[in-house]
Amino acid sequence: MAKARITLPIEGMSCASCAITVQEALAAQPAVAAASVNYATGRAAVDYDDAVTGIGQLVRAVRGAGYDCGLATVTIAIIDLHYAPSVGPLEKALMLVPGVVKATANQALETATVEYVPGVASAQELEAAVRAAGFEVAEPVPSEDPEERERFTRAMEIRTLTWKLALAGSVA
Image (cartoon, rainbow, N blue to C red; front, side):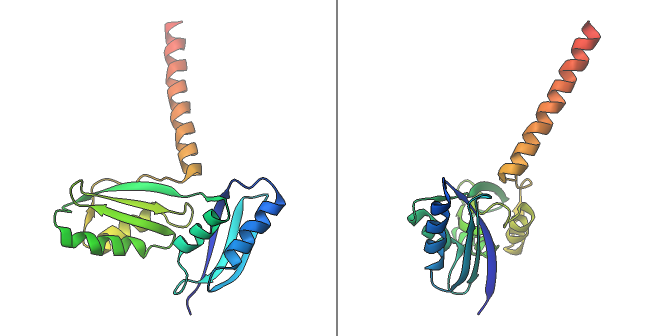
Protein backbone atom coordinates (compact mmCIF):
# COMPACT_ATOMS: atom_id res chain seq x y z
CA MET A 1 0.00 0.00 0.00
CA ALA A 2 1.51 3.31 -1.15
CA LYS A 3 0.03 6.03 1.00
CA ALA A 4 -0.25 9.47 -0.55
CA ARG A 5 -1.74 12.82 0.46
CA ILE A 6 -2.94 15.46 -1.96
CA THR A 7 -4.54 18.86 -1.54
CA LEU A 8 -7.01 19.63 -4.30
CA PRO A 9 -8.37 23.12 -5.03
CA ILE A 10 -12.19 22.95 -5.16
CA GLU A 11 -14.17 25.48 -7.19
CA GLY A 12 -17.87 26.29 -6.99
CA MET A 13 -18.57 25.71 -3.29
CA SER A 14 -20.96 28.31 -1.87
CA CYS A 15 -21.63 26.97 1.63
CA ALA A 16 -20.48 24.51 4.30
CA SER A 17 -23.01 21.99 3.02
CA CYS A 18 -21.17 22.02 -0.33
CA ALA A 19 -17.97 21.10 1.50
CA ILE A 20 -19.71 18.15 3.16
CA THR A 21 -21.00 16.96 -0.22
CA VAL A 22 -17.50 17.04 -1.73
CA GLN A 23 -16.03 15.38 1.35
CA GLU A 24 -18.54 12.51 1.16
CA ALA A 25 -17.88 12.04 -2.58
CA LEU A 26 -14.14 11.84 -1.98
CA ALA A 27 -14.46 9.54 1.05
CA ALA A 28 -16.59 7.14 -1.00
CA GLN A 29 -13.74 6.47 -3.46
CA PRO A 30 -11.87 3.17 -3.14
CA ALA A 31 -8.71 3.23 -0.99
CA VAL A 32 -9.39 6.72 0.39
CA ALA A 33 -8.42 6.63 4.06
CA ALA A 34 -9.55 10.16 4.93
CA ALA A 35 -10.97 13.21 3.18
CA SER A 36 -11.32 16.66 4.68
CA VAL A 37 -12.78 19.65 2.83
CA ASN A 38 -12.39 23.21 4.09
CA TYR A 39 -15.03 25.56 2.69
CA ALA A 40 -13.16 28.70 3.82
CA THR A 41 -9.96 27.85 1.92
CA GLY A 42 -11.65 25.99 -0.95
CA ARG A 43 -9.33 23.01 -0.56
CA ALA A 44 -9.74 19.28 0.00
CA ALA A 45 -7.06 17.19 1.72
CA VAL A 46 -7.23 13.52 0.78
CA ASP A 47 -5.23 10.60 2.19
CA TYR A 48 -5.39 7.66 -0.21
CA ASP A 49 -3.56 4.64 -1.60
CA ASP A 50 -2.15 5.82 -4.93
CA ALA A 51 -1.65 2.24 -6.11
CA VAL A 52 -5.45 1.78 -6.14
CA THR A 53 -6.89 5.26 -6.65
CA GLY A 54 -5.43 7.87 -8.97
CA ILE A 55 -5.72 11.62 -8.94
CA GLY A 56 -7.92 11.48 -12.02
CA GLN A 57 -10.43 9.37 -10.13
CA LEU A 58 -10.48 11.87 -7.25
CA VAL A 59 -11.06 14.74 -9.71
CA ARG A 60 -13.91 12.80 -11.34
CA ALA A 61 -15.46 12.27 -7.88
CA VAL A 62 -15.38 16.02 -7.22
CA ARG A 63 -16.93 16.71 -10.62
CA GLY A 64 -19.52 13.98 -10.04
CA ALA A 65 -20.56 15.79 -6.86
CA GLY A 66 -21.31 18.88 -8.96
CA TYR A 67 -18.17 20.92 -8.29
CA ASP A 68 -14.95 21.51 -10.15
CA CYS A 69 -11.38 20.80 -9.26
CA GLY A 70 -9.02 23.66 -10.12
CA LEU A 71 -6.71 22.13 -12.71
CA ALA A 72 -4.12 23.79 -14.89
CA THR A 73 -3.03 22.83 -18.39
CA VAL A 74 0.39 23.41 -19.89
CA THR A 75 1.75 22.63 -23.35
CA ILE A 76 5.41 21.65 -23.43
CA ALA A 77 7.45 22.01 -26.64
CA ILE A 78 9.68 18.95 -27.09
CA ILE A 79 12.74 18.57 -29.31
CA ASP A 80 12.87 15.56 -31.67
CA LEU A 81 9.50 13.98 -30.91
CA HIS A 82 9.32 12.53 -34.43
CA TYR A 83 8.37 8.89 -34.05
CA ALA A 84 5.05 7.41 -32.97
CA PRO A 85 6.62 4.76 -30.68
CA SER A 86 8.22 7.53 -28.60
CA VAL A 87 4.85 9.08 -27.68
CA GLY A 88 3.81 6.30 -25.28
CA PRO A 89 6.92 6.35 -23.06
CA LEU A 90 6.77 10.15 -22.86
CA GLU A 91 3.12 10.11 -21.77
CA LYS A 92 3.86 7.40 -19.18
CA ALA A 93 6.81 9.38 -17.77
CA LEU A 94 4.64 12.49 -17.43
CA MET A 95 1.83 10.51 -15.77
CA LEU A 96 4.30 9.37 -13.08
CA VAL A 97 4.68 12.96 -11.84
CA PRO A 98 2.53 13.40 -8.72
CA GLY A 99 -0.40 15.71 -9.46
CA VAL A 100 -0.64 14.97 -13.19
CA VAL A 101 -4.18 14.01 -14.20
CA LYS A 102 -3.74 13.66 -17.97
CA ALA A 103 -0.81 13.74 -20.40
CA THR A 104 -1.11 13.69 -24.19
CA ALA A 105 1.85 13.85 -26.57
CA ASN A 106 1.52 14.97 -30.20
CA GLN A 107 4.35 13.96 -32.49
CA ALA A 108 3.15 16.13 -35.39
CA LEU A 109 3.36 19.31 -33.31
CA GLU A 110 6.24 18.02 -31.15
CA THR A 111 4.35 18.95 -27.99
CA ALA A 112 2.99 17.34 -24.85
CA THR A 113 -0.13 18.73 -23.19
CA VAL A 114 -0.35 18.07 -19.46
CA GLU A 115 -3.33 18.62 -17.18
CA TYR A 116 -2.27 18.80 -13.53
CA VAL A 117 -3.15 20.03 -10.06
CA PRO A 118 -1.37 23.35 -9.37
CA GLY A 119 0.82 23.26 -6.30
CA VAL A 120 1.23 19.49 -6.49
CA ALA A 121 3.07 19.15 -9.80
CA SER A 122 5.72 21.73 -10.68
CA ALA A 123 7.30 22.84 -13.93
CA GLN A 124 10.66 21.43 -12.81
CA GLU A 125 9.13 17.99 -12.18
CA LEU A 126 7.50 18.01 -15.63
CA GLU A 127 10.80 18.96 -17.28
CA ALA A 128 12.58 16.20 -15.35
CA ALA A 129 9.98 13.66 -16.54
CA VAL A 130 10.53 14.72 -20.16
CA ARG A 131 14.31 14.29 -19.71
CA ALA A 132 13.74 10.90 -18.02
CA ALA A 133 11.83 9.77 -21.12
CA GLY A 134 14.88 10.66 -23.23
CA PHE A 135 13.78 13.98 -24.69
CA GLU A 136 14.72 17.64 -24.35
CA VAL A 137 12.36 20.47 -23.54
CA ALA A 138 12.55 23.12 -26.29
CA GLU A 139 11.87 26.02 -23.89
CA PRO A 140 11.19 26.28 -20.16
CA VAL A 141 7.79 25.04 -19.07
CA PRO A 142 5.53 28.02 -18.26
CA SER A 143 3.88 27.92 -14.87
CA GLU A 144 0.10 27.55 -15.02
CA ASP A 145 -0.33 28.06 -11.30
CA PRO A 146 -2.95 30.84 -11.00
CA GLU A 147 -1.08 32.55 -8.14
CA GLU A 148 2.21 32.42 -10.04
CA ARG A 149 0.51 33.84 -13.15
CA GLU A 150 -0.98 36.67 -11.07
CA ARG A 151 2.43 37.55 -9.58
CA PHE A 152 4.02 37.50 -13.02
CA THR A 153 1.25 39.67 -14.52
CA ARG A 154 1.54 42.21 -11.70
CA ALA A 155 5.34 42.37 -12.05
CA MET A 156 5.02 42.99 -15.80
CA GLU A 157 2.39 45.68 -15.18
CA ILE A 158 4.59 47.43 -12.60
CA ARG A 159 7.56 47.32 -14.97
CA THR A 160 5.48 48.83 -17.80
CA LEU A 161 4.04 51.57 -15.59
CA THR A 162 7.51 52.42 -14.27
CA TRP A 163 8.80 52.95 -17.82
CA LYS A 164 5.76 55.06 -18.69
CA LEU A 165 6.29 57.19 -15.58
CA ALA A 166 10.00 57.66 -16.42
CA LEU A 167 9.13 58.63 -20.00
CA ALA A 168 6.39 61.05 -18.89
CA GLY A 169 8.75 62.60 -16.31
CA SER A 170 11.49 63.15 -18.88
CA VAL A 171 9.07 64.66 -21.40
CA ALA A 172 7.52 66.97 -18.82
